[in-house]
Image (cartoon, rainbow, N blue to C red):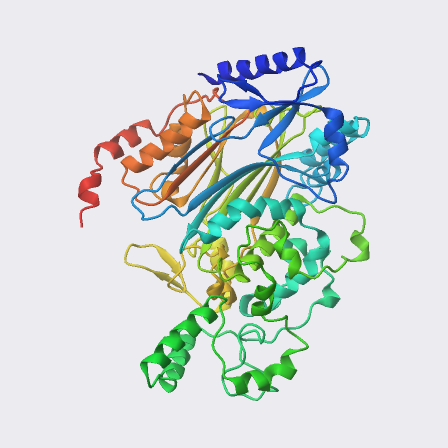
Length: 572
């Protein structure tokens, strides 16, 4: 079924829904042509339920649109319904990629304010948002409820296991929706206590919500809370600034030689102890070292994450707000009282809180994950689905080497919405320059930070936090004309590692449905010999199916396909 026929079927479904509006039944109506369900519910019911949204919001696996009779239709977000998704394990033993699609609910006034401050403070965006906000002032509560819908499309690429990416799939959008400004100060203080790169962290994007007078100083070197002093220095002696990787490794080797186990049982106990400490990026300390530092550290460090871990459920995905159990609520400064967080500020705070939750849980803190999230918000009044909206508020939130691209309808140009957070990226290299560690190029020509990490921004990877590996996202927010763009496509590095941005966008030309586009990209990556996990997420916009210009990479793709022998390339 083509996209136009598919959209016609949706319209017909809405008409059928309108004709049945007098029926008291609210059971779901099966529609075979769409492979989904549409349920009827009056907008007055939505308004009543949204009255308590500020106390308890809840994401949904569907979104609502207004019908001609004043009711609403529920459109399901099942895979390959109104978006396309394709995944593959490749030749890896497990699938560490995950994705999440959901509809969130935020106050319309908060969404309007997101376009008046950086990184979306352009004149055109601010003017458009102002007009949209004014049009909502006279709108009914029902229309305001629909205007507060925010679509979430997330792509996560785990490393070191699926624990972190699975946690993000189930919880990151939940945290984003429920996070509050009062959590900012304690979250920033925790991040400062990591030490090293974060020792002078004041909040970055969320700094205006932080009570700076509440931030306690953190000593140079390992944070007392996370890595007690083990060098034998006096507690009053000023520790050195951040050391290089070679110096840290040399000290570690010397101390290991002094602590050589005498028996097999001691060796096993030592391995278990080191594994537990490394899970939170800490180093071992003797009891005398801890006692010597206890008084000095009590005034300038957060509680040990082990204490927070005792308060954290063993399975962090079972509770909606696990972070609330170990995050102190501190009211923000008076000069921001009554204001709303922008989407960039909300994203930064929720990313840091999610990363803290991961570090505080033994079941999660075993690896890491990247994340690229596209947030779409209709600015039409009344609100319409994202794929039909003339004006779309678009926000890209990103850490790591997953990728988001925007396709221009006029010529099919691939417009990057994210940057690769790799050690050889100029911006990342400059950010990390002062840390003192370095970039190492492996035998395959890939840059590795501190000789181990391909990504300089990620969730988890707590052993490398002091060296600057951060979960602070890179965020862009823009208002776009839906008629000027065909789709947004997100993918993991199993796809981006073997294909260029333009090749990926060109492969989606002519696809009748987003699911077909996603499958085409994944299939071509496999034909080129990609053995990594692969995930492709295709999100249609109003210009879907109308891509102009020439397929500039067609000949190149055919040449690459003809010269690829996956059996030879994978031969050991």
